[in-house]
Every structure is written in C-alpha cells, then in structure tokens.
Amino acid sequence: MNNEIFLLKQGEIVLKGLNRRRFEERLMANITRRLHPYGKFRVYSRQSTVYVEPKAGVECDMEGAWEALKKVFGVVRMSRAHGCAKDPDAFFEAVKTYLDDQLRTAKSFKVESKRADKTFPMTSIELSQYVGGLINEAYPNLKVDVHNPEMTVRLEVRDFSGYVHANPDPGAGGLPVGVGGKALALLSGGIDSPVACYMMAKRGLALEMIHFFSYPYTSNEAKEKVLELAALVAPYCGRAVVHIVPFTKIQEELRRSCPEPYFTLAMRRFMMRISELVAEEIGAEGLVTGESMGQVASQTMSAMACTQAAISMPVFRPVIGMDKEEIVRIARKIGTFETSILPYEDCCTVFTPRHPKTNPKPADFADIECNYDFEGLCKEAVAGIERVVMRAKG
Ligand code: ATP
Ligand code: MG
Image (cartoon, rainbow, N blue to C red; front, side, top):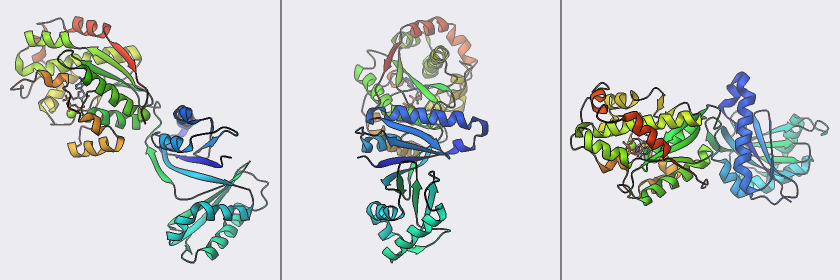
C-alpha cells in the first residue's frame, strides 16, 4: 500500500483576492499535468495547501513525482507526509518511524495538528499535547518551544487516514505558469536566454519559443542544441513549442545592403518584427529576451532602443540587471548551463561587424531599411517557420 502523500503550500497566490480561485485552479491543473507520467493522483486544495494523493490501488512513481513537482511554480513549500492509522498512539509511532533522524538532531520542537475529520475523539490541541508529551519523553535532546522551534512536527487527521510530516522543503516559488498570459521567448543557444525563459515562467507567463536559424551558416547541431535547451526549460515553462525561423535569406540580404556598423542591429530588428508577427498569431502579448545591459554592443541602452523601436509589443528582459556570473548560477541550478556552453555557432556570431555603431538611433534605420523590403522579408520568413514540439526533460 502506498501510504505517502504530498502537501504543497501555495505561495503568493493566496494574496490575490478575487483572482485566488483562478490562480488555484491553474496551479492544480499545472500540477496534474506534471504528474501525468508518474501515475494516477488525486489533486485537491484545502486552506492554501494542495494535496497530492496517489489513487488507491495504483502503483505510482512517488520519487519521480516529487522531483517533477519541485519545478512547478506557485508552490512555496512542499512536504512528504506519511500515512498512519487515525489513533493518537499510531501518530506517535509514525513520528518515530519517519522523523526519527530529524528528531534526534534537533534541539527544540513543537507539534501542530489539523483535523479535517471532526469525528476524531480529540481536539487538535489535545492531540498535539498528547503526541508532544510522548516525543518529549522519547527524545531527551528536545525541548518544547512553541514560538521558535527548530522543528515543527505536523499531524493531520484527514478523512481516510492520519498523516505526519515535518519541516518542509522549499518549492519552486513564483506564480502558476499561465496566470499572467502568454509571451514568446527568443531562444538562442546561449546561456542567457534559457535563464530568461525560466525567470518569466516563474512570474506566471506561459511561453512559446522562437529561434532564428541560418543554415548553412549555422549547423543542424546548433539547432538541435536549441531544441535541447527548450526541452530542459520545458518542465518549468509547462511546454516546449519552438518556432524555427529560416533566417538565411535575411542575413544574406543584410550583408549585401546594410552598412556593416549597423549589421547586428538591423538583423535584430528583423528578429523583433518576425517575433512580433508570430506572437500575434499565437496570442502572445509580449516578447522575452536574454539581453543584459552592456553585455555586448547590441545590448547598450541606445542599441536596445533601436531594436525595441521596430515593434510595438513590450519586450521583457528579466536578466537585464544581472551580471554574467549571476546568470550562470541560475543556468546551473536549472540544468541548462552544460548544454548552453556546447560550442556551436549562433546566427548572431556569424557576421559580426568589426566596429559596431556606437550610440545608434532608431531614425538611422529609416535609410537603411529602404534598401530592402523589410516587411516582405519578415512575412516570407514567417511563412517558412517550422514548428517543433519538444518533450519535457527532467
Ligand atoms: P544568450 O543571451 O542566449 O546567451 P547571447 O548572449 O549570444 O545569447 P545575443 O546574441 O546578444 O546573446 O542575443 C541576445 C538575445 O537575443 C538572446 O538572449 C536571445 O533572447 C535573442 N537571440 C539571439 N540570437 C537568437 C537566435 N538565433 N534565435 C532567437 N533568439 C536569439
Ligand atoms: Mg547574452
């Protein structure tokens, strides 16, 4: 018999007043979807906690499910709770069985009980006192401290079973993916853009991704690497739909007719406009990039004003104020770093100007873009998009 359940404490969503129900439903739907590969679970919420119970008689992969739930945004704390009979002494036995290691090393504790089954013969306070007394006798190292205990032993009297659990693990934090609407993230093969995806998904945005691919200047391995990155961030973002845009013709056109100092920004204006067209098509309301202030010539304030001016949709740049080291730390945490540093070229690095224009102005592009059919080339690129849906990894 499977006698373990998970308790997931909702985060900020409890603060959201009237939207609370919508947030909670989204969180439960996201949790249910993430659990799908690991068995059949009952998912429901009570008092800002989501309960995840394996369905009776079904073999579930509890370890896999637990790991997957660590990547679900909207959960601040998570506990594994162990089942026991609904009897005061059985609660104490379960505490000794499952929490022994923690109880031996802690210095202070308290017991808190929750009673969903109102037919249970003791009140919550009586149950806490009873089990607390037994713990106090069994572990001489522990003192009761109701204000600031090192360890809080929690007892739950639910309809079909009792449960014990203690200090929870941190959850992924953030807001449930989807509550903030949808955005389109520009995913390159670098370190920054997967981190940007993670950060915006954390604030509740559902994401699709777009990648600009310049075959044969960039190789199929470079494309595979980007798809791999999409699969790695998918557990956080929910899905990994990647729009692969054929970008070769535009780059060749630019090489022919764009003054070299403006080359990168002219190319990035194409990227923004094409992304905006795709975003409109898929119902996304903003774009996301991995730009960081001053990181390269195309990421100065004036350069970003030029790329933003090509479109009217907002561009979100969650790593804008972060140092590379800080971005790398997150990339390692979410498991994208090792893939990001694989040595494949990106279309941005293929034709890099020797002397990029310093202090460019959006107005400069009026003259440049009359050398080619900006809108026409954008539409043609959109028509050639390949849409790939990746399976989430991890
Ligand atoms: P990353 O930021 O992912 O490490 P990078 O540092 O090489 O890549 P740039 O090439 O300056 O950054 O690009 C800045 C941002 O533009 C990227 O973070 C990404 O959002 C977007 N971008 C760059 N190249 C591409 C591409 N080929 N396809 C899609 N988006 C791209
Ligand atoms: Mg970058």
